[in-house]
Image 1 (cartoon, rainbow, N blue to C red):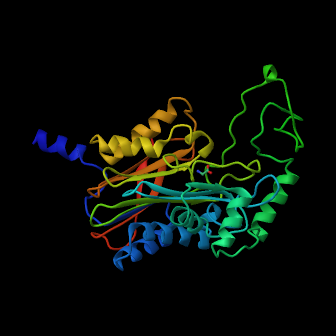
Image 2 (cartoon, rainbow, N blue to C red):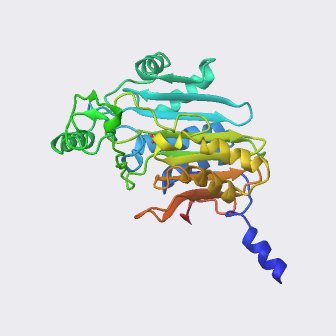
Image 3 (cartoon, rainbow, N blue to C red):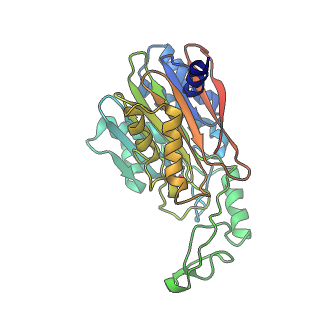
Length: 335
Ligand code: GLY
């Protein structure tokens, strides 16, 4: 009996069936789109691309796609990546302007170049040359977020050690002597979910992962978060599994949590435990960071973990597998 109970408590979060789609947050239509691709015999890369594209079109809760997270100039820019866990190819774009389908452009970088990562204006030119339509990413909503931010004296913002005092004033800013620096509290809005991260694993154990986001609200122009960085935003390796992250990318990208989680699963760690260790590693230095990681291994087990904060005690994510055949909302208690 005791042995049985120990076994039950050691079981990983998810049942083990393949194929599997898992993504951050309750972005159900994205899961559905990816699952439909797999059901129709499509590849795991197609599933991840179509799933994340769905979120870009739907502007999933404003944190993905056009019309969200305007930067200090009021412009929406997009970051995305996709990774093939069979070949370890990656395509990524960041600070992408005027193109709505960021993960599509990331896929084009992977398929039509020998590069991994294109950024900024040049990434947009590349996208246009590849046939993507250039359009304004501003909407009434993003305009009103930006206007309100200006009215609020540009609060919150990401500047530090500058003059005038960035906690009270808009720029332009000049550097201030570091000796006078005071650690500023990070002003992250934990209700602005910030990324779709998705892992798809085929019947044959092939893994793909990807992300798409419009980054951080009021970011400094040029800022790139964790989402398009392989190993940070997502990672896929068909000999081990996949992982994807969401949260405060400025902090999380310093720890490559998705790479770490996949490496832990390679050594036999259960997905839940791999995710937990990736979160713990960040917590050690930034106990108040906002973030979560999803993990899945090549046998179809999955899990997730998140850093507990006031107002963020549970993290929700979506799963589709052959047992459910429809997207199921799952959640995990943060620690
Ligand atoms: N995790 C998304 C970002 O920080 O840009």
